[in-house]
Amino acid sequence: MRTAACLAFLLVVAPAAAAATSKPSLTLVPGSPAHLRGAHFTPGSVVRIVESGPKVAIFKVRASQAGTFRLAVPPSADRCHGWVVQAIGVHGERASFGLGTTQCGDAGTGDTSK
Image (cartoon, rainbow, N blue to C red; front, side, top):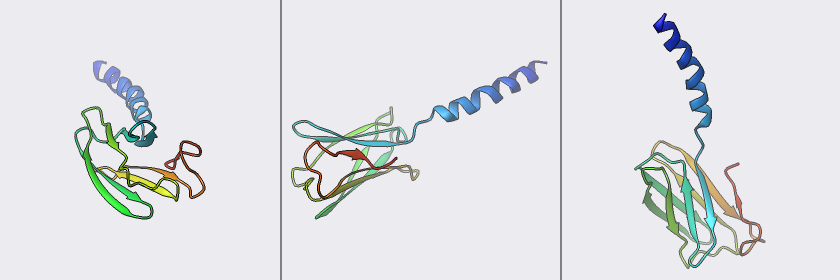
């Protein structure tokens, strides 16, 4: 009887826990300096950041134990002429963020991972 109760509990709780897992996200946080904020990556893992625009740059950051990170936006980033940033986790988890060529400043910022 105890085994059946445990099995029933697992059948109810396991799918709910899987559904609650959030996929990785990457957002631009305005400020001085502006920074990128990543969330829901593998805790403590290295996340590769690939910046594409007029120039390509690659950075590595370590996610916190909560699976988050912050990275200051380099002053050389030309956010007014098309800019895409991808965050790629150690297990292949991905999130991206981009600005179109006609979008500049805070207007038109968006998460491209949807």
